Length: 290
Ligand code: UTP
Picture 1: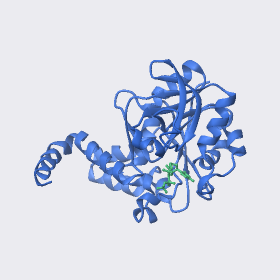
Picture 2: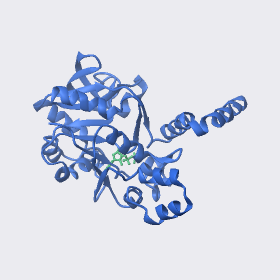
Picture 3: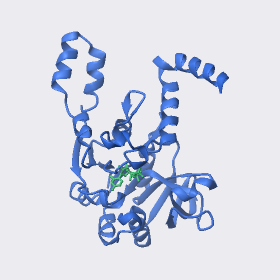
């Protein structure tokens, strides 16, 4: 079956980004001039997905407003003859079906995905974390995973190799290499110490999942911080069904982390045609003073 739907969890508290996240969802923080969440939605649409469910929560109404048509603003831009900006803001909602549902309490990533069960039904679906951007102008990360899914008809986790010092921050897979960049998943550990880690292949915010995951999420007991962990349900699913991990190509930014956000801002600004020349000159001058 083809992957036609995606869930984007965006209901987390964003405590690492307080105080901004007291009233601004971290997924709406702009990287240059575009909210993180729009980069993520664009990745899904570029992978051929038109139906996207965003999991939101309290204090996150800015997300619904952003993906809605802005009549007054569009009218003002039209009267001004500012066609470029008009087209740009219309591109946010045109040709995409954005659905939203509220996670009533931030009970973890696993719980957030469970809120999408009725939307997904009984078909494979994609998950993209709302605070992770993956830059790959040639082939979006999700498209790479969907191609693997279509070939093998199995769940696929997006992974990349992380440094030893960062292993403790991620879900780490154990696996057997079966093709170029592709692993058969044989187990996984959530946030292991380096000693416990079966490899350095970290699960990084992109997944194509079998709908069977919902049954395992329902059976998953809350763990650390009273949160339902996706990794626990993935582990159970991997024991029953074929599960693959694909070492995707692309630069990934954890925008929910302050350093990750700054890295994304600098690098996207350097890629922006209108900004890059002046920004590079500024950075060069600044470097002399550091
Ligand atoms: P994170 O763990 O990065 O989000 O979840 P967080 O809990 O908001 O982060 P901090 O540690 O407090 O800063 C990854 C993604 O899953 C979503 C988040 O919004 C983020 O996009 N998420 C997390 C939910 O939708 N619901 C949750 O209960 C937890």
